[in-house]
Length: 183
Image (cartoon, rainbow, N blue to C red; front, top):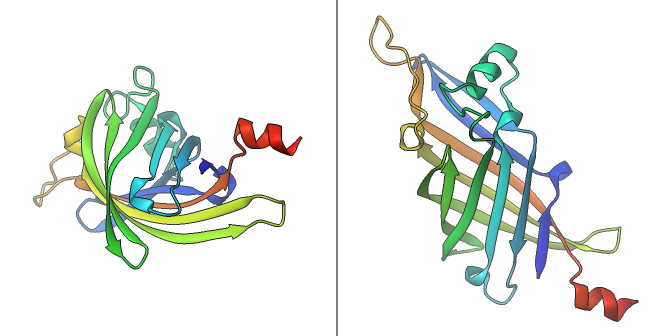
């Protein structure tokens, strides 16, 4: 079953420590994704996503401009962040560990995401929807996002660990064969 990410009902959020004492959260506003779901065996499913790096939004214009600069995402040279799922391992109770390839600034690393499948439901508009909650973390330095400032009292301005949180709703896409049969 082929599915497309429903941007109106999906959020891609991240958080990082700021000055070692607080957490700054942000999200990306412009993204797309496709999912193939095997309802008989979810470990045989897959997902791909593209995120427009320039759509980063932390609710602070100056910080967002800095994140778009060469110090971080360098959106002029590397406009797209991509993700491709790989091995999916069942953890029971509709929970899965997904290993996938994340590419930021032409650096690709394997990351692990914890995924909870929330189920499928018929929408009032005549198609199926499915939902997922996803969490994980990564080292920003692994992707060349190295900018930082040492703090006088010790530590760093920006923490290395980036926590990820994705709440995703996907919509079933009619295949060409199904569309022809329905016509």
